[in-house]
Picture (cartoon, rainbow, N blue to C red):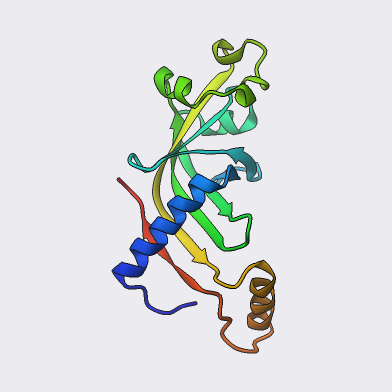
Length: 169
C-alpha cells in the first residue's frame, strides 16, 4: 500500500473519488479539533468547484461548532466496499440562496417545518483541499481478510491502490 504514486495514478484516484462522491449519497462529516463525533450527512458534489454542499439546521451542534468556518473531514466508504476516502477542507456557512434552491428536495424539506424558507435552514459548503483515497479491486470480504493478514504481520496486504490527492481548485 505504500508504493510510490505517479501523477497518472493520482488522476485515476481523483476520478474514482469523484465518481464515488456522485454515486454514494451519505458520508461522515467531522470537524477538526472539536469535541463532537463525526456524523452521517448527505452530500452534494460540485466537481468543477471542488466543493461539497450539505443542508442542515443552524441550531445543530455541528453548525454551532462550525461558526464562520472550520477545518473539516468528510469520509466516504463505497457501498460495494471498493472505495475508502477521507477528504479534508474548510467548511463554512454558505448564504447562496440559488445554490440552496438547486439542491433542495422533498427529502430535505421533511426536516423543516416551513420548508426551504424555514429560518433554521443552513447550507454548508466544504471547499475540498486534499484527500487520502484507497481503492479496492477485491471487494469488501477480501479487503477485510487482507487487512487482517496485514495486521497479523503476515505480509503486505494486497489491497489495491492508495494515494494522496490534491483537490484545491
